[in-house]
Length: 289
Image (cartoon, rainbow, N blue to C red; front, side):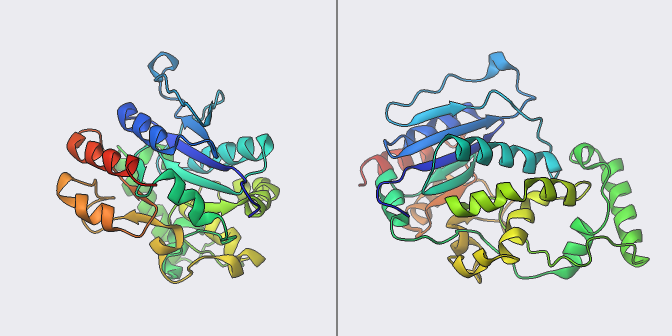
């Protein structure tokens, strides 16, 4: 990474505007640009006014209706990466959700990446069975599944039948899975964009493509050799995420000491309902440099 190259923070948000404003305030820094995609299901009049004093802030005008597990998540990610890439040459692009928060100061995060050049992409242990079910079968009802048990059951039956009868697609591809949330270099973003058409076609009618497409692109390219940590998913992406206590767990006031002691740069997920935790963490970060 070149000296004093700016970073792009790419945020996918759909709710909890108070927390989103806190996130933006903690990223507001002259060497950061911030891009926000707000779900198209949110009415324009409900979108909050967000102000930065140091960062350039870009609220995406074109918005996608994002559905959990659906290809629309990948489309929203690509929209953010593409707009940021076309706007400037950034040292790093950090993909965050609107319910994430940094665990380190703006200055610390920037300096952490100064001499890195690594790709901060988290990889799960390889699981071929999961790949078969998620991305080698067909899922036609993903956008309807989250709140509809009938479609979830129907999807599960179809996927299992396709696996049992070996009616699988994409058998020639070695899929890898991991956290959606990454920090990647300009070179890797360029590689992602070159492969955009292929990716969107490949992952059509799959489930949870956002947890596969970046990892799979990286693994099957020269960028695999530049990954920060291939063996530890969350060290690899520098995100503190707890899947043991929730899906994922929402950090509580009692977790404050764990959060500030973490070596990771970011954490998810948070809620503005835990106001005391958010206030304590914000105060702590604003006193660090």
